Image (cartoon, rainbow, N blue to C red; front, side, top):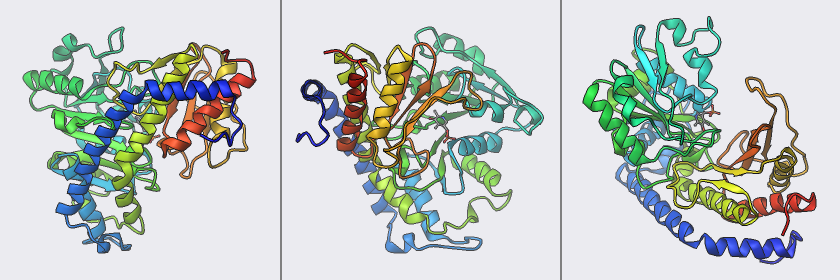
Length: 421
Ligand SMILES: *Cc1c(COP(=O)(O)O)cnc(C)c1O
């Protein structure tokens, strides 16, 4: 590599060694990417995707061929009966909220069997704040089965926990915690246990950050409904906004009734000019996810060589695109995030600062220089300024740029005396 960025020579040597050490992991990531691309390409072909699917549609959106065909493509890729892929979802949280409100009825209970759900869902469920129209306000009860000490599901306690629940809720990604991401095998195990004691329950999976990370998806493991964001993995860095819900046809319809209105569901909601970018995004997604994963594996391998604890460890099967670097000190977090920011294609000239983000107890620092606002399939790093001072690294649209971003982060730490060779 020509040293265009004037990185320290010792750093470049460590980077070369890290890449060499990660060769096996990279090869497996490529195999998974190839498998995902095959699923996507096949689905495009068998659903006869054509240029007509990319034309914009306006008004009510009746017979919007771009929208309807994309739903079928999506259902084929994720091996589900139906899908609801819409730019009308403003975020992943919105899609998750739509699914919960779509399926649950007053008096029902939902149980999260992977501990606390993602922060933004606390208000949706009604764990935090009431009187605003949360699920709790509508008489939906919530309970939670915490993970065991090593961050894995408490399989033995699941039968009792899911017994009379309407929705059994799982979060695949580690989110902002040190627990490992849920593997598809773990999901299959939870589905199996649930079916034995409560065959009617709807197994719903927050699939954010998980798409195309493994050969199979939660729906291959028997999950009834998966939900995710298009400015993460399945949007391939190209979709401009949106989310998806995929699974059993009856449930997808209930969700569509919630997104638009009862009786109209999927038949309305024009695609405007968003279809082409959603198709292209899905087409690129397996490869972009592979680039993000390689960026993460490169960072983890390099920083392990530099003496830091990094997760997941190579022997763990990845279930999401997040890499955790335990930096153990606030100055190191600041330096790392400053480097990631400086190494970004957009907003490289700004310096991230820790701030009091609403809803968080400690200050949070975030680095992101993305083409799409908030898109964490693009290179980004963030974390709460508290013990153990860990940064969560996501994304990298291309491996080449992701690697340079990580090197910039290491270089910044080196210049501030936070790394020693
Ligand atoms: C990103 C994410 C969400 C949804 O977040 P949005 O920012 O609303 O898209 C939910 N769960 C997990 C695990 C996520 O990573």
